[in-house]
Image 1 (tube, one colour):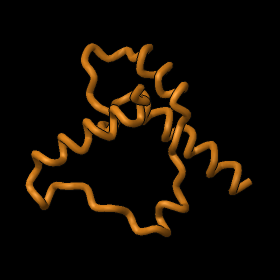
Image 2 (cartoon, helix red, strand yellow):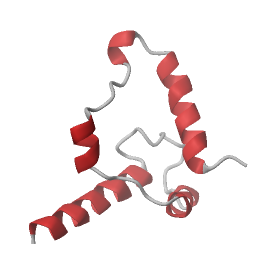
Image 3 (tube, helix red, strand yellow):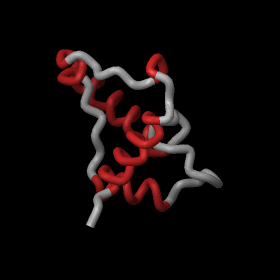
Image 4 (tube, one colour):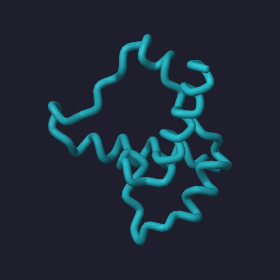
Length: 84
């Protein structure tokens, strides 16, 4: 069975394959990836996805996606704890 992460990543890869080279996502340098941890559990992503208030799925890469909103909120909580 595919996880939500697998489904999203496959959809993203298929979408990015249709883009011209200059619009494709560039991998972040390793130091950036170590600083930012925006992962939510698969269960939490599934809960958010099933309760999505949007009429149509905008995709997790869109900033209006409730999963992305929750990821940003979690990032802010993590950073607030580090600064306190």
